[in-house]
Length: 349
Ligand code: GDP
Ligand code: MN
Image (cartoon, rainbow, N blue to C red; front, side, top):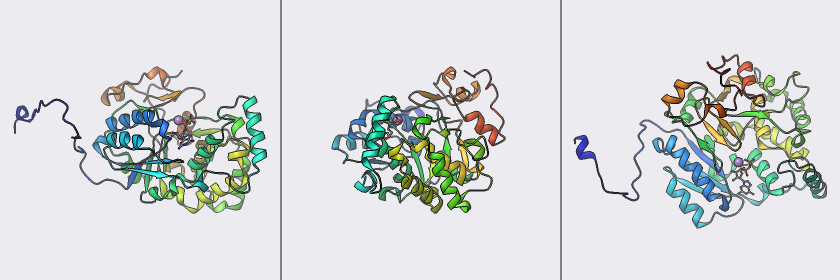
């Protein structure tokens, strides 16, 4: 048929999604989102971004997890937006509560102190359960056991550039296990003893520390202290089998026993990051320069005019966080002997 005959002008035909345009095999992969029912419109916005820039071409599944049951509206809105299959899981109670060895009075005192000091989320119980869940449990939810790869998506994120290749396949073919788009320094008040716990794990399991790892990304003194650099985990594309493996599980168990999810306010970002830095070879961690991303308050906008034009980006390069003094991304380049992208100095803020 000619292009003219192909042009159907029926306005707004319902329920006809465009077909997947990308040919070839799909990976065993899923998007995964932890959310409350009240997050529905914020997550709708994120899904639309991800579908428009990537997933309408690949139709990957999307798993939603919640500590309460998802309501009909949440399921209906998100199912309508996702081009792949959607699955909805409730989190088992024991994955979202205090372990028996935690002294809850001590935890409550810490929250009071953090409230005084105005530490972000410092007084929140649910935020702590969330961080612990993302650190140690999401990858072992029954719905996640079917998959090898995940891409984490949070509410109200933005993608600014077209992604014209299968990022999961990229990870597999290039032997990557973990990835990031933004890195930064963690607030020290939230993790004062995370490194002590990490050292305890290293002493018990020296064999689980990889040769050729990224210790230099997380420590400036060969492992004596943590420099607070971490990958921002509200975006992640990663390998679930790595997280489900013995080394990561031993690491998480050590942290969980030491209690810092409740006695401090350990975030899943520094936990995943330290684990990736120490138990993966440095080549197994990937910086997705070409995935342009926003989560309040930071933007990753790829350096280089030509790239941004070629990929129909709509981010403002002057908002790029990569070369900011609070970013650890330059350090990542140095650790990996990677050349900084052309023009980075001009885009330094
Ligand atoms: P921030 O990005 O650190 O400011 O934290 P968010 O509020 O975005 O929370 C991180 C992720 O966990 C998001 O995907 C939230 O939707 C989700 N989340 C946070 N708290 C809860 C909770 O109490 N229950 C559920 N089900 N999801 C939560
Ligand atoms: Mn968030």
